[in-house]
Image (cartoon, rainbow over the protein chains, first blue to last red):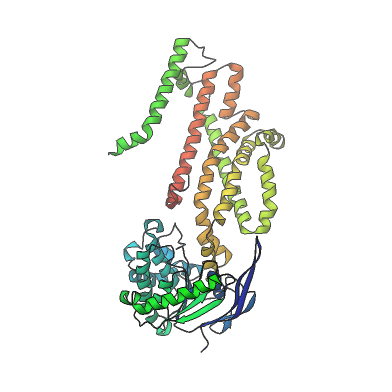
Length: 263
Length: 256
């Protein structure tokens, strides 16, 4: 079976006001079905760009990108995206925001209503389905945006610093929630298979807590500096987050990052 | 706090000021003995509001129709042009310089041309009102349609949504508060345009009433016409504000 994501010597250069910017250089990476892969790196290392290349929202300058064995030549289908900001439509209720993907895809939103409500229930927003985004806290809005990404049950989730704008406590809470949803929604997903997640973050502890594997990227041009498998057991708990093993791994990644930045 | 005291807290100060000005006006006229054709007393203005020798109903009706027509025309043309500009870069590049040029014209100075082209009647006045009022609608429509988070547009692309669907689901609702706030400006501008039109070329309407008082020195009637014009303007403005609360309640307070 082909890996869900396969990047082969991907490079990306774009024109900015200050001239050509090389965002990514020679990035090769595969992500297997059901894997949770975190991308960490300093800001401006091109990790968000990498996510958009995988989604087909931007084009690579060199190299090839394939999703489920098919070369990416435009926006890919069957993908859920979560961004750093919740980007909810402020005139729609939470429920109607969650149903937006169905409407955009030209499907009947009524047929997805039950699933939308079940997803909102899953993240504890059942009572807020009829509210407008402005009536919810940032963390609750981001939960709604996660439900929106999951509505059409995509086998692949691309998450771009989804909890980066939240306060530390809400963020920890959301991490547990995401793992729970990943497990539960994965079990109920197409063919009962677990979703594949590519998760961009600038928080090392977050990456360690969530991922099966961490890709450490160096500063511009973004290259892969280190690949760190995370051997921590699942399900991940608060105890695991604060364990010595998690701490050691976080330190190793931190050192890899600072060494690269200094070099 | 009861509803009444809250309402007074909000409108009280301006009502008190308004009342004081009226009293000062009445006092100034009667104490200083200012003659009626220079400054009529508030009371004689009130009497003139329904004064017998002017066919108020007819003039108010004509001006109302013109203002409404100008407002609707400016809205329709403005929204269509704004949408065209937001729809494609080529249309934007084609239309914008022309629209900016039209907007820099002193539109009042164009008004006499409308008389030559269209003659007397309602139509030229409607057109002048629309011409003065349409530009903010164009700009705000285009801005509102384009002020969309790139991430949101990416969502549209990921779900393979055709352009018209992104307009229908995302861009147009997003533009509502922008358009409605432009319409508040347009409501005022339409009144100005219509009255200017009536000054220049008309035998009916409140603007015409004001012009005729120049020769008759019937100043209370001019004041009364002013009062009627401002009532029409306030009604239209209030209707737009109510429409905004109804169509875009989520934008209350953020867009004024």
